[in-house]
Image (cartoon, rainbow, N blue to C red; front, side, top):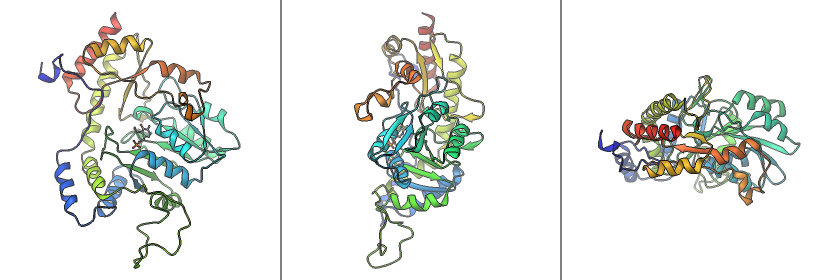
Length: 375
Ligand SMILES: Cc1ncc(COP(=O)(O)O)c(C=O)c1O
């Protein structure tokens, strides 16, 4: 057994993937005369657009900013409702609150932990202004159903793709279709630049507006070359959400090597699915044949999550509860009656999955899970 497989070494829940050439690239970027949003940010957007077949890309400073700018562009504000999932990181839903709107929680599906389109339908009111879904753990939502609701009700669907870079729905990269998608390049994501984000859309009209919302209401690229550098008028209250060239350089390095973490996660994810499929106490998620998950996370459900986590941690294996249901926080207005969410909030826990997890490490994780399952 290699050193990495030694039982006295902790297997971490999280890992960071930064390509070997990233430091040198950033060093070069620091030598440049321009550090703010410039040529590298533009190149990052163009390369992202080509790699994931996305018509229009707007780079931002993080995923939360991407969500908020999208909501602002759609004119979501006080008095409006946005239907969203409680099974997510806080940011999906704080972005709605930041806009002064109300979060209406739909329930999730027990098989993949994604928002349940049937529940979304039940939550629609005349005040509904948008729907947000999250491809939880990188396992794509039932987009045909959600887009159908969006079309019928004339509601935009925002895909929170923070977990889903490189995932595909019906052979198409997430973020390449639909209305709007928001990505995150935060530390543990498949591409990281510390903090960064991207808004993608196939709609030119959205793109033109979004560009303004990420920089003070001004389209930086469309600015006239003038002495004061700003247009005659600014008619949109935008944010300071742009991505700078240092961040973009790091993100570009990640993007150029993105097939490395994507491929490694496929191997780890498939092995967990193969070797844990017959467990009785640990239930793995459903992965639909018409979708390609990127395995950003590997969630499992366990009846007695406490005893399972104590067992794993005692063997130096970090399993973690990543997200609690959003509606448990009082800022969200208190607990809703969501039976599937209620159970998931008690049972879901993540197994380690990242590029630092060696084959030996994963064998240790699997062995420990199977032993727990047998007892
Ligand atoms: C589902 C989801 N949405 C949004 C975000 C926010 O992204 P960021 O940290 O880049 O703001 C995260 C962050 O992890 C997330 O997991």
